Image (cartoon, rainbow, N blue to C red; front, side, top):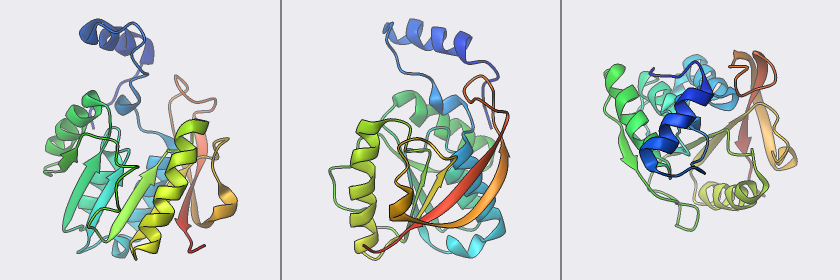
Length: 192
């Protein structure tokens, strides 16, 4: 994976390249706790995606999409709204010998994708996003699509609406997280 060690130099480079002094944090250059938890889960439970079509929501670096490919997914679509993330997904996919289809748009107002499994790592870091993600994931689940969520216990995680299926100790960067070793949780979205 092409990942950064330090956030500030990269963030400054993104601001310079984009001409936007308020450019968002380059989240796509780091492995986050929820994504690492889902990746570990797929390594231990490849049957969750093996031979199935997978949609990696808010893919970031593409870590979870790549883990799904290694676990035997028949096809993976990685979606993100950030054009830098789309580039990172392509680079990281190629570095791992996998071609991952990317989708560069906000899908939360769209119908569920035509897939078998949706993976969603680290989607609960801000209130406005969290308010949109859970209803969409519930529509996805109601359409008969399996949903796996990964999160290290963020403030806006709707834990009461999810069922925990696994936990993992995951190593993250203290550049972005408060601890180098976090507990990443994997959940399924249950039917209401």
